[in-house]
Every structure is written in C-alpha cells, then in structure tokens.
Image 1: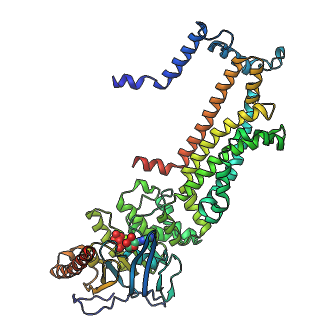
Image 2 (image 1 turned 120 degrees about the horizontal axis):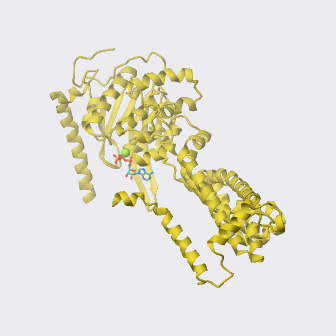
Image 3 (image 1 turned 135 degrees about the vertical axis):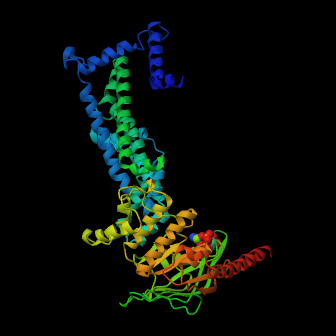
Length: 266
Length: 284
Ligand SMILES: Nc1ncnc2c1ncn2[C@@H]1O[C@H](COP(=O)(O)OP(=O)(O)OP(=O)(O)O)[C@@H](O)[C@H]1O
Ligand SMILES: [Mg+2]
C-alpha cells in the first residue's frame, strides 16, 4: 500500500482532474457556448501563438508569444532588481539604525496600504505610456515585501552574535557585512520571493493599461477581440513564468543558505 | 615554572610566569554599582563591588542565580557600563569590547553561516592580520582543541562540546591577556565538561592569561581557579574570597582528594547560607 502510494504522482492528480472537468464542461455545453474555449482550443491557439509564422494572416497571435514573454520578463526583472537594489540596503539601515527607522519607516507604513493598482493613473500621468511607468509600478509593488522582510531579519539578529563580533574587534561596517547581513539573509530571500510574485502581478496590470506590449497587453487586447482562448493561454503563461522565477529564487536560497539546511537536519 | 608543593591556603599570590613585558593585565572593579531600569521599576543588580583579579590569576566567581554574575562580567567585557564606579583593565577604563579581552559565552555564539575555520579566523581577519601571521596559530590551536579535520564543518554539524571548543579557539587565536568566561561549560554533559576542564587547564598553564570565570559548579571552580569568590544574593556583592592553592599542573583526579573536599564543603556552606538568606528575605 505505502509502496503504491509513493509511486503515484499525487501532485498531478488535481490538475489533470480539473483539466478533465473543464473539457467535459465545455463539450457538454454546461457553459454558455462560444464564451469559454475548450482545453484543446486553447492548446491549439497557444501552439500557433508560439510557433506560427509571424505576420501570417495579419493575426497578432501567430508567432508573437516569445517576444511578448521577453517584454514582460524583462520588465519584471528590471523592476524587481530596482526594488531589491533599493529595498535591501534600505531595510538593512532601517533595521540597524533607530534614526533611519524613525525617519523612513512611518512613511513606508503610510504608503504601503495604497494598492499598486491605485497608483496607475498617477504613474501614467507622471511617466506616460512608456516602460518607465511599468517599471515604477512593478518596482513599487516588489519594494514593500523586500524592505519589510529585510528590516525584520536585521532586527532578529541574535544579540549574542553582535557581542561576539564586537569582542573580536569588528566595527559597524564589518558587523553589518559579516553578521547582520548573513543573519538577515533568510528573511531577505523570503522578501525576494514575495517580491517577485508581486512583480508578476504588477507587470500584468501595468501592461494592460500603461504600455502597449507584453503579456498583460495581449491579455487585455485578446479580451477586446473576444479571443478567450488567447486570454486563457496568457493566464497559463504568466502562471508558469511566476512559478519558474519563484523556483529560481528558491533554489538560489537553498544554495546560499546551506548552513541553514544543515541546521534543520541536525 | 614554579612548582608549589605545599597545598593549602598560604598566600594569595598567583604563579608568575612569562609576564616579563610590561603587560600587567589586572582587572580592577572599584566601587561598582549597577542598576537596571525596567518597566515598572529599578533592579539593583550589583552593589559596591570592589574586586581585583591580579595579572595571571585564574579567578572564579560563584553565586546564586540572578545575583549579577553575568552583569559583572559584561561590564568587564565592555558590553555594559556601570551605573556608578569604575572598571579598569590593565589600568585603562573599559569603554567598549576589545579583542584583548576574550569572552567565552555560555552558549557558543558561533556564526552559523561560517565554517569552523572561518569562525576562528573571524578575529584575525577583522583586525587585518595577514594569513601568514594567523595561519600557523590556527593550525596549532586546531590541534590543541582537537578540531583538526573539522575546519570545513558548519557549527550546526558539531556537538555541544565541539562548538564550545571553537568558541574558545576563536578567542585564543587573538592571544588575549584577559579571558572572560560566563558559565562556558554550563550546558555540557559531565563527561564533556570534564574534557573541557582538562583543555582549559592545559591552555591556561601554557599562557597564564588573567581569567575571570563564572560558574554554578563549585567543583569546577575549585579545580580550575586560584581564587574563588562567592557572591551574595541580589543585589550582588562579593561575600567572601577564598584562595585555592592546590599545586599545578592540576588534573581532574584532584577532585577526589580529601583537602579538595574539605574546601568544597566550606564553599558549599557559604553558598547555602546565602541561598537561605535570600529565601528568608523573600518571605519577609
Ligand atoms: N538588561 C537587563 N535589564 C534589566 N534587568 C536585568 C538585565 N540584565 C540583568 N538584569 C537583572 O539583573 C539581575 C542579575 O542578572 P545576571 O544575569 O547578572 O544574573 P546571573 O548571576 O548571571 O544569573 P544566572 O546565574 O542565572 O546566569 C537579575 O535579576 C536580572 O533580572
Ligand atoms: Mg548569568
């Protein structure tokens, strides 16, 4: 029994079941006809979108998948990197220095409840319908979890380790680099994982409205021309990309936090 | 090395070895008071402490829990400041932690993200020593504390005793003249603790650092130290100071001698008296 239950790929059961349900629901016309596409239709359109000859029959959904994926991925990475480049150092200083905390922290807490969707009009008014607008929204969205988790990680640093470092002759800079940063690293990486998730949310919102390329733009455009099959294919694409980028950070954390995985086993 | 043959308490002079240079690492607490301000009131932790550890002396402090032993040590280490009074080491007021005063904590307090080797070289690297200076020292130390072959291990992969040995090695590599130890072996099992005693004795008999050693364990104090001071219950004061003049080098077998047990009974009586006093005061 246990041998069999170990061999069953349990993770695949639920997705396959849902796929089957979806297929049956569409073919049996449980859903209003012509609105929800079948899995097969989605697969076919998705295939054409990826591998079809570009420019054929003037359809924008032939052979343009890769370029749109690249647009969105580049924006996510750029926005995410900007957020990390500002969020991590700022978080370190907020957590480390009471003065910086008093200076900056209240403002962050004040702005944080404003959803990034609410920033859209402001962003377009300031940055126009350009990349800058998208990067602003993505960066802002990813910034909050990164800065908050970094701050939290720094404040969690063991007092005994700080004393040990000072006793061994370390000054503030050395302590930040060799004690506080590694100690906060698990938290920082959690922040990065949350941040990249928000970045994918933000890129879709930004591309729907603030720029004219990328998966978000395709999603909204396809909806307007009633190509629900492309909409669904886009949703799957975004889901996959989000999952992949999360995995990349996860694997990276396992590597840099080797000392910690040992601890869990000890 | 001067061998003292007659046991018993004759004088308080510690052995004087290899202190030819002008480095007189005396620890001097002069009328030290310490008060903590907590929500809802003040806690008087230490009261009018006058205490001296002579150069090259191994001084142990015993006392009931919460009497202020760690507080005292933290002030000598420079982690904390007295409310009143002065703390001097080698004639200079203690302002901040300093690698010349090595601290071994009750918990090993190793950097979990560094290997054994990186933990031990943390101090020398921080001070900008070149590897050619600290490498030979590290090699010798690894052998001395029995950690060869574990250089690449992370603290999480070590036993409690091994962690504490790394904690000692990373301090010794700085060659401090003063060693401050706050119940360093308190969390180890008896077997490991005994091995650590032997290690510490061999280290100290080689270098004769000035040691301030805090413990709950009377036997440990008598085995290791030149003097044992008993503190009162909070607010902590130094109640009594006894010289322990068993000949050196000492070994764990000493703990079975009649003279040792006589001294042990004496210290035990002092501590009992103090715990009883603390208990009655609490009731009053
Ligand atoms: N940072 C602090 N803030 C407030 N009170 C403190 C602080 N540190 C210590 N105390 C108080 O001072 C007293 C002495 O504490 P200390 O840690 O020095 O005792 P100790 O003798 O080392 O005890 P133990 O043997 O349990 O380690 C205690 O009552 C403790 O509650
Ligand atoms: Mg203590």
